[in-house]
Structure formats: structure tokens, C-alpha cells
Length: 505
Image (cartoon, rainbow, N blue to C red; front, side):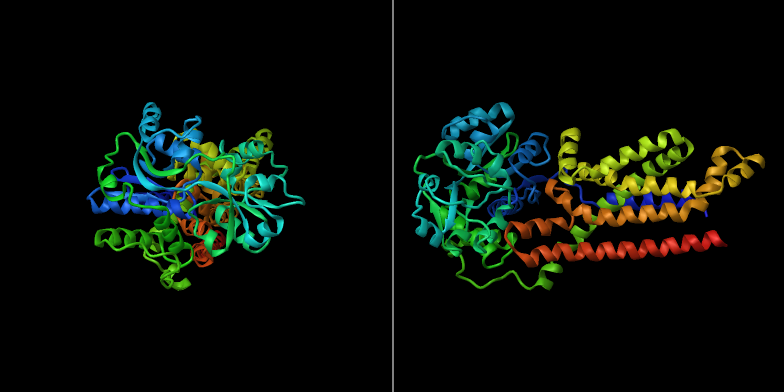
């Protein structure tokens, strides 16, 4: 049994899957960050564009402000919901609360514009459980600074590192606390409700504030600037359809209601956006959060939602395309390590170290290297992670063969390459294939992380579920990923048994 045709078939399958991925190059791409409000606003923008006849897609939960800025700069996305205070401090590194006209003058050199003010201010704040705040006599952030006794903070990752986040706030109020490790914004509310933390950073339009009966601490020194919601976009984008449908249309109450419909009523982002736009056309006022029954459906409804085929296809493309790349690189490296023993230790060390790099760190490095987010850096990252088992098993499989086999082939007049392809690789095929199987199963799980940079896949559901504390949504992504890993293991086990039978013939 020759290994080369097997690898060729694997590469062809991956190439076919790659061509099956929808091409978004001609579409206007709307991005969003990883919290409920950004998902909803991103979906509103997408639906408005589609209704206006503009082909548009929504790449959900892409990451923090730095990732979004880079995605806008390189054209990976064209528009996303942002806040004026964040633009001023994080993107422009300035202070103050400028007018929209002044803000756009500052953005112009970057090729960006804040063209559509949405109509509400969503400021940062600190929040505590009402009973704890009342017991400790804390109503303002200054009161918090004077609080006696230890307090546990559950701050979001972005708030910990923002220019207008914890570091600057701590200095402004002389807060004598150490915040600890960062928490996902949605999980922080859950930890607060369970008494695992005492203080969290909040957005003033968060639906969880009313639901959990939290006290929002007054910013008595006016540290936080205004965070008026806008649509930040590349300067080449025609904002007229978005402005006509959304400009100054969403007040604080409406935004809080939409957040509540997702987080409390269990509705999908798409459904909430669609209903808001329909209410606007009919002139019906927005309903308050919790005024309707949940419309999100059961776990099975979410599991078999219409987006499942797309997510599975994207996931499979990432797994098998990266696997094909890893095979094309890893097998020759394993052969080289076997043929050149002096290089073996260095090669194994390099691929071993590459696999120890944390996945998000590697993704961030590759985004900077290739200058884009999405499929390409995710594909490269998964290929790197798949190398170690393939290189190691290729080397081990060849090393397990008797030296006499190679010498016999050379004595018969075969060239070294012919001995490798005709004798050694076929005999080592089961061991090599075991490494390929391990890499494939690993990549099924790792591919869920690719969602954090907009590469799609089943991780979309997991990230969205984290954003809204929706366990059913998280499981609707985790369960198919686990089943896919088991199926991959089962298929590769079958092929491995077939290879062993062919070798024994």
C-alpha cells in the first residue's frame, strides 16, 4: 500500500471542502464584539443592509477593541458597533468627549468614520449586589475606595487592560484593591449572583442589572466619558441605508429591552433584531425585558437550528484543510529527522515548543503576521498544532523498521527515494496514520477557538452562549464538536485497521 495516493486524496478532500466555503469577498462584513449588546447591534446592521439590497454577513464575537480596529484597517470587516468613549481613548489615544464632527475629523486619517449615532449612551460602571452595597454603605465609587474589608473583583479581560479601564480608574479613585484574573463579561454576572465575586464592571444598558437587583455605583468624580453608541466603519462604506433605519432610533430603554430579550427571554440575536425593526416599521413601542415568554426553544431546537450545516462545514474545512497542510509538512520533516539523526533533536524540539504556545497567543501572533483575521490565521494555527504527532509518529514508524530492509532495497539497485516510497513508508504507514489520527481529533476541539478571530465553526455557538450565560447555546456548540471528534476517531480507526490488513497481506 503506497502512502502517497492516500495523502493526495486527503489533500484533495480538504481542497474540495475549502472551495465549499462561501466567499464573502463581495459582501459587506459586519463585525461584533463578544457581548450581548454588540451581537444584537451587529445583527441589526446586517438585517438593515440586507433589507436595503446590500449583500452583508455578520461575523460575530470577534474579540476586543484592538482586534476590531485591526480587522477594520485591513478590510476583514467593514462596520461594527462601537462607543465614542472607546473610540476616543482606545483607538485615538485622546481624552475628552468630542462632538461627532470632531471625532470624525480625528478618524479620517485612519480611513474610518463614526457615521451612524444610534441614540443611547452605554457607559462603563461598577456594580455590586444591592444587599452587600447597602450593608457596607457603598453608593459611589469613592465609597468603594473607603470600604473596609476585602472585596473580590470579577472584571472583564478588556476592562483590565483598557486605557479607560481598571488601571486608570484605580488611580483616579485610589482604590486599594487587587482585581485578580479576568472573567468573561457574561460569566462575571453569574459569579456575582452566586456570591463568588463582590464587584463587577458593567455596562449601564445590561439587562442583568435589573434582573439580579444590582446597585450601579455612581461615578462621582466623572471618570468615565460618554459612551454614545455609533456604527464605526471604513470611510468607503455608504452609511445611508444604516442611517435611515437606525440613526437615533435606539434609546437606553429600547437597548436594555433587547438585551433582556436575549439574556432573559432566551431569544436569538436574529429574532430580537428582526422584531425591533418590524416594530419600528409598524410604530409599536419596544416591550420591556421579560414581558414576553421565552422564544429561544429547547436544547434540541438550538442544536438543530438552521445554522448547523454552515457551522459544521466551516468546522470541517478548518480541521481537514489544516490536517492536509500538516501532513504535507510533517511527513517530510519526520523523514528528515530519521535520515539526519543530528537534526532529529532540534526538529522535535521546534515542533514540540510550537504546540506548547497557548492557542489564543498563537492566533494573535498569526493575525499580526498575515495582517488579517478569520480563516487564514486559524488555518495556519491549527496546522502548527497538528505537526507534532505527525512528525513524531513518522520518525517513530521509520525508526522501528529494520536497517536490513533499506540495505536490501539498495542492494537490489533501488534508489534511496524508491526505497523510502516503496518499502519504508508503506511499512511505517500504520504508525504514521496513528499520528495523523491524533492530530485530526485534536484539531476538532482546537477549531472551536478559531471563532475568537472570526473563522466560524461550532465555536460560534459556544462563544455566543458564554456572552449571554446560555448553557443550552453553549451545549448546542459543544455537543456537535464532541460528536464530530468521536466520529473522526471512529473513521480514522477504521482506515488504520484497513492499512494494517493491507500491510499484512
